[in-house]
Amino acid sequence: MDYDKLKGVIEGLLFISGDEGIDAKEISEITEVSEEEVIDLIEDMKADFRRAGRGIQIVEVAKAYQLTTLPEHVPYFERLATSPGQSTLSQAALETLAIVAYKQPLTRSEIEEIRGVKCEKALNTLLSKHLIREAGRAEGIGRPILYATTKEFLEHFGLRELGDLPEPPVNLDIEEARLEASALFGKSEEPTND
Figure 1 (tube, rainbow, N blue to C red):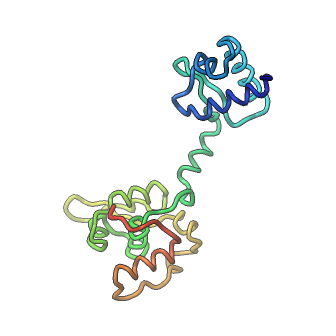
Figure 2: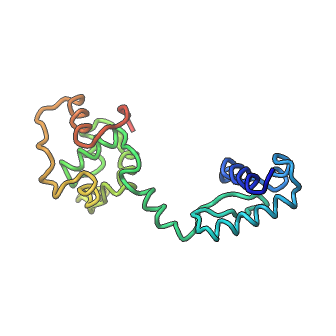
Figure 3: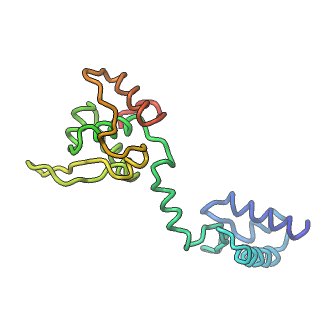
């Protein structure tokens, strides 16, 4: 097998081994190439990646090789991970978001009273996606956290201001509310009670 093809095989093995990595001995057994030659090829691949300005690198951790991203690219990965558009919201999160959008600021217990189920997981999801924020504390016992929507919420849904939200329906049953939430916030998963 020529060196370029062998490098491709090793790159594939590194990729499928994930964050567990794979050691030179195992690569040697799989490719039927000496361990020393595998190590030389990996060192050559490391240099190739650097010269080509690739977004990944090969690192050795606990005698196993693995593909990793470059540390200087972390800010971009963080943006991807926190971008609201990178994953769909569950039905519970959509319902919770709709309640916060229309009734803000309000506490978790007020949201749970409206929804009829716990909403801690949905709130955490919405907070992590920066669609809602902690907007202070309510007066009263325990001074519970108040939640409100964010600028990112407005940007994500293309709203200039909260006044651009459609008028909430009056005396709406839960199925109609789910349809409204789906229409306003896009397609979602099946209803859940989280």
